[in-house]
Length: 397
Ligand SMILES: [Zn+2]
Image (cartoon, rainbow, N blue to C red):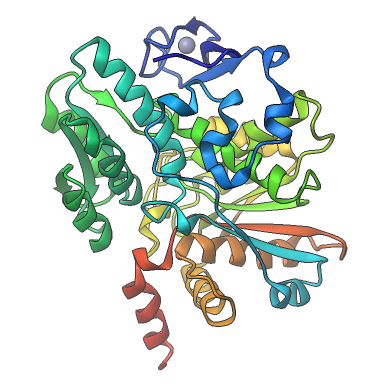
């Protein structure tokens, strides 16, 4: 499998050591995540500015490690931005858009990074015996991994906590992936990968494979195309491991390096109050988040007490001039339900968190009135319709 002309390899985000594409885990010398690097002088900027966003993630292979021709793809990305004038009026800003990542092949934004990571798996599997492949997952990424690896006929395991959504568990099996349901929460599923496999494995977890956040960065490139270069002023991102915060900031930063934009949007990471390690770190001025001691949120996808990309996410938020804030579960669910009621969108808890975050930001920081706000709906409402509906019933509806 060929790599793209501008791709130069992998660099450690800790010790800055460089590695070739044959490395597929964290830095062998210091254990920090690896990040794909490029010779930006060699990137064909016309290929970026003229890319058709309807082609999704791989429309932007000029800034990805692998070519579109080599990709394992389900036409991921190419998600629409849907304007909501009601929210713009209520928040008293110029405009509000929802980028609906729920329309990805398996219903969540994780498909972007999984497409790039699975493409790397295909390459590595042709050179060596890399089985088994494994990842811990709150649910969505396990479903996505099963879908993307399905055609490769490799043994792969998703370790999910017992609390993860039924839709995720069912579809992991339907796509032909092996599943291990671990009693407890996400941290228990993380521990179980090493405890149960007792062997070397090929990791697909965020920030172990260098490619999940790399695929996520295509959200930034698509927004560049969606808004014809006039990017939103604020992007609200539901945050757990840091994958989307880190990826999106990398994309905007690259667009700036390539001379295609002059300013980058402020990124605001939104976490549930019951599990908000990034927010606590921002408030305390830490460089690395401390693990959240007692995670407790109904939004299972956002319950990640020890974000694998935590330090990188804090760096990305600071570089964007943004911040992190927390919102209560009831506000997350109310926002998701309100979006579903007023717009033709089925937002999951992730989308609800983004909208609730915009409200909180308005209260804490205020908007001037001229802003264009982007809310990232990271998952379809169909992932957890039971949670959304029970929220309504809790209100007597
Ligand atoms: Zn290192």
